[in-house]
Length: 293
Picture 1 (cartoon, rainbow, N blue to C red):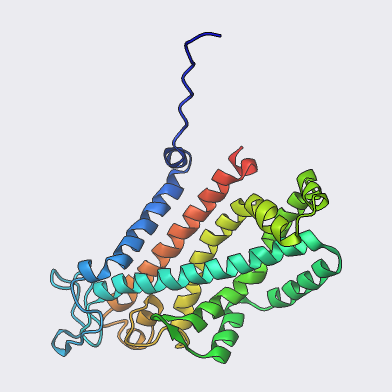
Picture 2 (cartoon, helix red, strand yellow):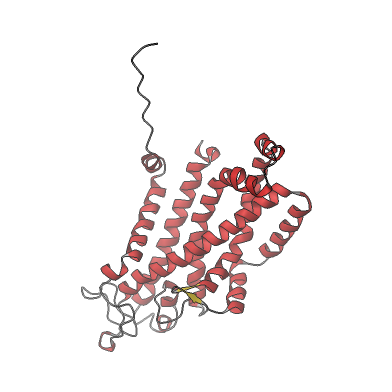
């Protein structure tokens, strides 16, 4: 045997590979990272207090002192948009994570057990899917009311997460059905492993790709839904900054005199949703061999 050893081939960097293959998705990810950084460092980079009222600066047009102008209470809009990113991303991520995780586990269980259990779960999914996502969220948040935990309205998170559960359940179940037919699942059952062990150890990791795609896609949906509920007065309450809340109330009364009150929060919502949709679509193309081909 030769003393010389062959050098191992250098493994490609997955991050660089994703950037080269999906430049639009990388651009969306960059926007997401910028928003997340702004949300985390809001106290350090925001020029003003988001809840400070200054009646002298009411309805000030965009200027060097207030780049995005001020609202009807003299609050700096740029500051409130930066703090609003924290609200949107926190509620969006928690809602999507809870909804996709619960729906994903329900879909895996439905595919694994099959039979009557699968029929009951899927009929329940059909019933929930018959309601539009906005209407279902409105009903849930109206019934639950508001309950803040560590500064986050968990009832609002639940109202947004519940409509996501059946949608993620249906998608993950389709992927789990093909995994359920694999020989190693039958081998694990013959080996005496419990159903919980097989679901968590063998099935869940093999449906991770569609789960991650759903997670990123529904963050955008959750951000838009949170903004809609806040606009209707059922989401975040004043004086806490939220993009949807900034579009409601006085903004609709002063849209001709101070259009910047609507313009900049609307752009923030659109940019966030667009960035997550770009990243989610690119992630699907990157992880799914059929789309990659």
